[in-house]
Structures are given as C-alpha cells and as structure tokens.
Length: 86
Image (cartoon, rainbow, N blue to C red; front, side):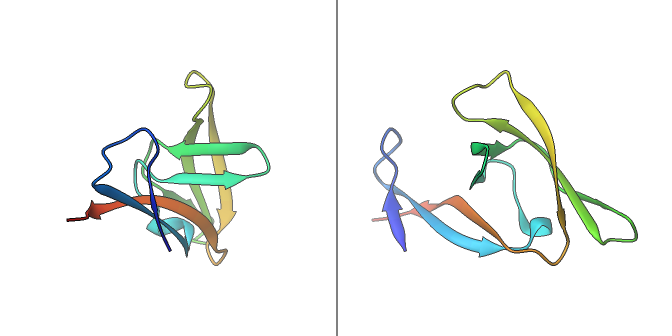
C-alpha cells in the first residue's frame, strides 16, 4: 500500500508494512497506543536475543523520548519512507 506524504517531497512515497523489531531503521514511524513515534536509535536486543529495544520520540512532542521493548518475534506496523517515485 503506497501513500504520499502530506508535508514532504511529493515524489517520495511511504509504505505501511509489518516487520519484526530488529528490522526497524532510524526514521521509521510506529503507530500504537501512545500515538505516532519516530525511531531515533538502532534496535538492540537483550535476554539472549529474545527482547528487542529501540529509542523513539513522539512526532508531535519532539522533546519526549522513550525506550520501547517488544518480543523479538512480534510483528509491528511501521510507516517507512520509500524510494523516489517517478
């Protein structure tokens, strides 16, 4: 599913996809119970690779940051900026 970003370059498309937490990249957007968050750090695992952590910040409150954690097997819905569309 491709969507165009509202306030960005119209030639860059965003995709919403599901992935495991270790596949997150800096700049990805997550939407969950606390709102829309942007990934600001690389994911890392603890507990022999069973738990994945990533640092995020809220899109509407840039000074708010948090360390989010998931099971390594869980699937997350992520908005990722794609490549340029011509």
